[in-house]
Length: 123
Image (cartoon, rainbow, N blue to C red; front, side, top):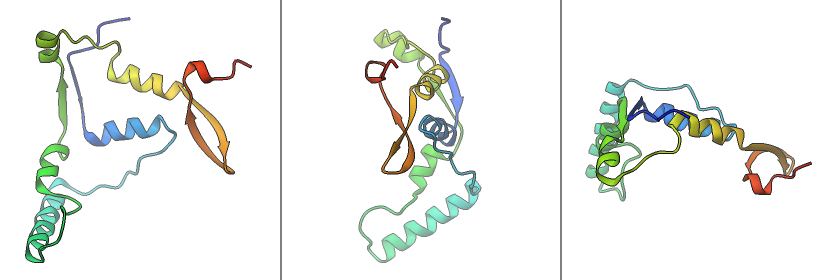
């Protein structure tokens, strides 16, 4: 098995899409532009303050700064300072999660269920 790379690029949408796919769920393909989301977050923030609403708006500009743009995960510092060494790359981990799914019937609905290798019936 080769060494996983220090940096993997992606977006939060691709990460969540990959994770959902391991459970047999198809991520939606609808989206709005970053500019539109930025404007909506500003409007929501304004009304939350104006009407002194509790909690946070459904989307904030701070949230958009974190999730609205492509990002790179670089584990170089964790390798150097903590001695971290991943066992598999992100893509390999997603593939392993996908292969661990076993379809079963739960209350009449087809739902993917994850079973660890020790709980899978060998038959």
